[in-house]
Amino acid sequence: MITRIAGTLLSATPLHAVIEAGGLAYEVNIPVTTAERLPQVGQPARLHTLVVHREDSQTMYGFTTEEERDFFRLLVEKVSGIGPKTALSVLSKLSLPVLHGAIAAGDVALLAKCPGIGKKTAERLVIELRDKIGVTASAAAPASPGGAAPASPAENKIRDAVLALAALGYKAADADKSVRQALAALGPSATTEALIKKALA
Image 1 (cartoon, rainbow, N blue to C red):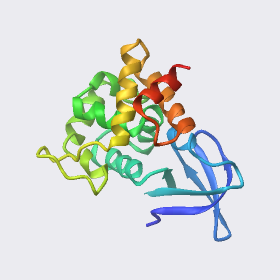
Image 2: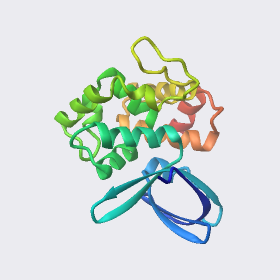
Image 3: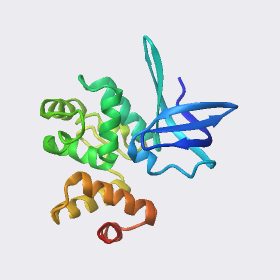
């Protein structure tokens, strides 16, 4: 099982990256949220990966963090009706902190807005993953009595900024995208207030 790839980024699109490692070039399927954080072509790149084997193919999926990769695995392995393509669409539409928040809150309406996810699948997603999302959280975070690990401070900042923009009338997916872009511009040490200001600029 290949769980990580590190090498030189040869090319990238919103849904694919090609990384050269050890003299071989690997095509990796990625969500938009990972593509946004890739370095420039020609620079070193590292992705946490999951290889999905089918009867007629082997496909590699890559993510910026282990948590995103593990959440992708949960979607594919634990939620009936969600395959790799749909799981990639879900992670392309919403960032992991927002997905965790939506599942924990049972926000079926928000989850149903992801491509390939209808209301029934969104309901299954909440039922199947609500008690498992702690698996994708930081191992350093203590588990809560409900079984799921609490969100990290970084996740809370992103979620709070998205909620603030949503309260101002932004659609959740648009708010999430704006906050991700603000985070990329300001860096992980940015405060919730700074993220909101940058997203509104």
